[in-house]
Length: 236
Image (cartoon, rainbow, N blue to C red; front, side, top):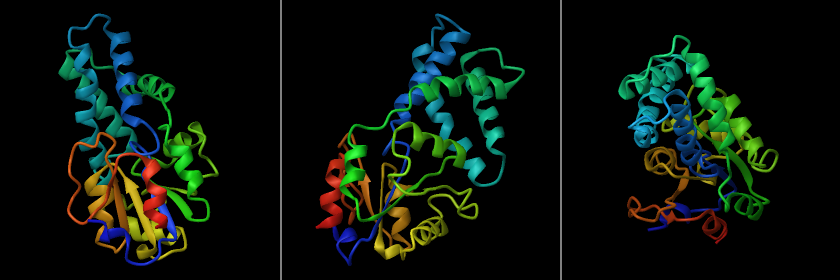
């Protein structure tokens, strides 16, 4: 089940960011709940806001990755869609509305407790962050959680010729940014398609971070439930 990481020496490690190093879900859930509460105190569906916001995230981000809309426009669409679903007044200035949510979201940025130690334990490897967010925001997250200068370059589609996970060119470009071949790199992340099976088509190795430990990994790939399990997997 671990042949994916045992064929040749690993010289570099790429970390996904949201859900791997940073607790994105916790910050987003708290942020959107606070935002709806401010706009509609006592709203009867306040408890649903976080799940609704999460469901809107992936399709609108995918539209941005595909070049169908701008980064700002996908944010506007998400705000409008959430307001329509909850019966809230659609803001006349969706950019300002999203900025209000973003302030709450940023307040919740926290590294997972296992992140810093895992990065430190991989000293000597070439490290980087491979993420599908916007360059400016993802760099800000890395600084906020205390990993700036410790985890290597932050690589997004904005610096990888418009290629986002799971496009094969995203992984090969990220490996090249570390000065390595894909076969010399391991990617660890929480999304099976983007962080595990996606890089495999380029020869890059991968490990699935399943923090809840509830689901079997795809065949041929290792699963870890904490980043504390990553250094032994890479170095053995």
